[in-house]
Length: 79
Image (cartoon, rainbow, N blue to C red; front, side, top):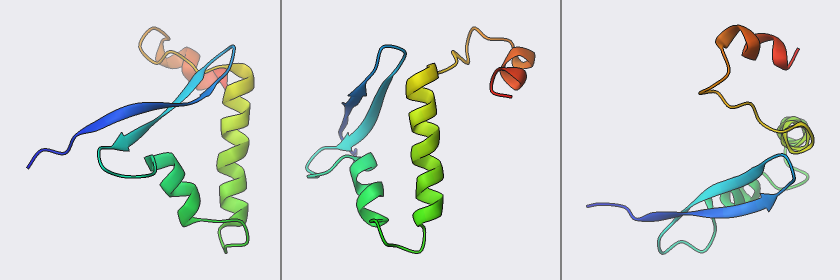
């Protein structure tokens, strides 16, 4: 059986856009399901804060184009 899905635009920034997979027939996207699985007050709060911090960082600085950026440049770009 094939699973149908589509891509949701989650957030739009000047440097990058964030998308999430949304399975057909499901109420929430995969990103929404992830954050519902680990609500504020869970034992994983610090870990979720790290994920959110990285997403904020990427939103501010933009994402690297892994296809056109040489590996050596990628290694130092986020240092």
